[in-house]
Image 1 (cartoon, rainbow, N blue to C red):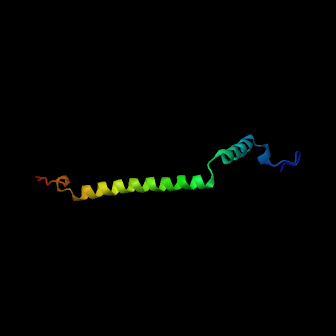
Image 2: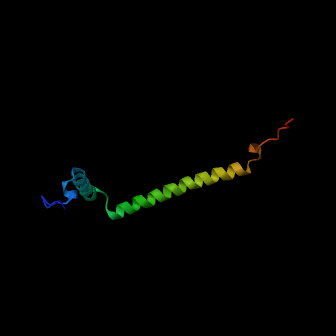
Image 3: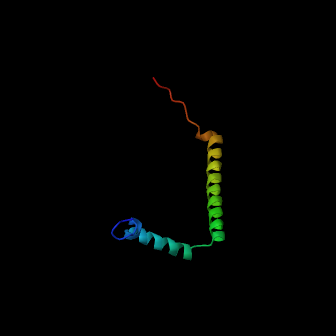
Length: 75
């Protein structure tokens, strides 16, 4: 707290006050906890899908005999 006003520095800081107001607005108009959980699960499933696509591409590249390197004779 500052001695002359009795306010904490946080109360004097305009940015801190704005952050608090924005936080309250986001909580008031944001999705419910249940909806947030659905979005989180959706994000996890999306990432699992990307992982599966990458795993399939790795498997395909690993077993394709035409994509193997070739030998070059160096003199």
